[in-house]
Length: 234
Image 1 (tube, rainbow, N blue to C red):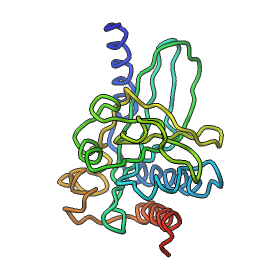
Image 2: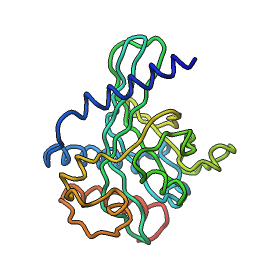
Image 3: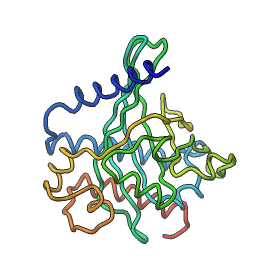
């Protein structure tokens, strides 16, 4: 069992190393932001199978990983790049670039792509997420989130989880178990966007003033529109 865990962890590390090789550019960041904005907009417009309104209203931060890749044969792994934004009062903060990696074992052939959304429900989850690295399910509790406009967190795991996770594959949103995944700020991408002195915490919590690109503004606007739609504030 220990050997299997070590192999899975190694696969995840290799995915991060190989995919993140080389520094991020402004063009790379713009593509990630545009894709994340599209996923978020489509999710908020999903008529009956999106994230419940009461979950959105309570969200402290949201992480969007567009097109997370799963690949391998027998032993495989998943890797994705995305962005996080945290709520500050009635507004959302500047996007922070993030990386998510997760090893897996078992029969799997080919490459699959899935959009992921993590909703951070409390300050404890926020603090853990903004550390250098967090292992979902170990360092921070995570549960597959309920789906449907009027649904609510019905299980003990959902009600107490620091983060609720969702996936979209082939146009359908559903709760997903991300336990064992490793989530961390993308240092290169954040430095390319905001400068080397801006930490993930500074960006997310607004303790350092940063300039946002048009793509960053669009992502934040998509979040703000979603909040207004679910809370009734116009």
